Image 1 (tube, helix red, strand yellow):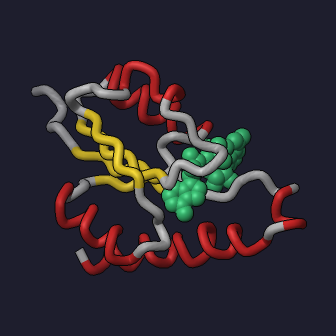
Image 2 (image 1 turned 180 degrees about the vertical axis):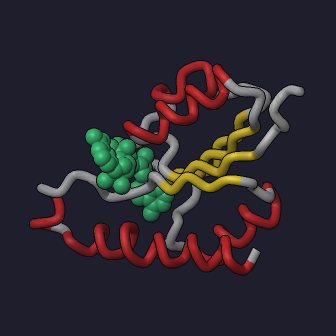
Length: 119
Ligand SMILES: NC(=O)c1ccc[n+]([C@@H]2O[C@H](COP(=O)([O-])OP(=O)(O)OC[C@H]3O[C@@H](n4cnc5c(N)ncnc54)[C@H](O)[C@@H]3O)[C@@H](O)[C@H]2O)c1
């Protein structure tokens, strides 16, 4: 029996790790993929490769710290699996600008967890 089709929500799906996950899921599985990305300096649509515009992939530009937007994503797309890869990941930048790290890595993760729990 073939695997059931699942819907993945990938945050940070236009980043280094997230885009590899999205490309792999779209290319090698029957699953649906919803990417949420704020499209910071670290993001690239090109990194999505063939997943960009693929019928089983949807790219949503949104900030994970935005609770209303995250609730709306969960309600609209009803994911089975969430992979949280959105982050401020370049640690050197935190010396000059720690705010983005606190917002995304701590508050954003909390907001995402609350949205998942509420849904
Ligand atoms: N790259 C590595 O070698 C590596 C190794 C181990 C763990 N990790 C972890 O994996 C995760 C992803 O790393 P990466 O290298 O892909 O990082 P990255 O910086 O390449 O990508 C992060 C993505 O998150 C998005 N993003 C940032 N803030 C956001 C927000 N508020 N809302 C929505 N999207 C937002 C960015 O636009 C970007 O596309 C991080 O938690 C990192 O610590 C990475």
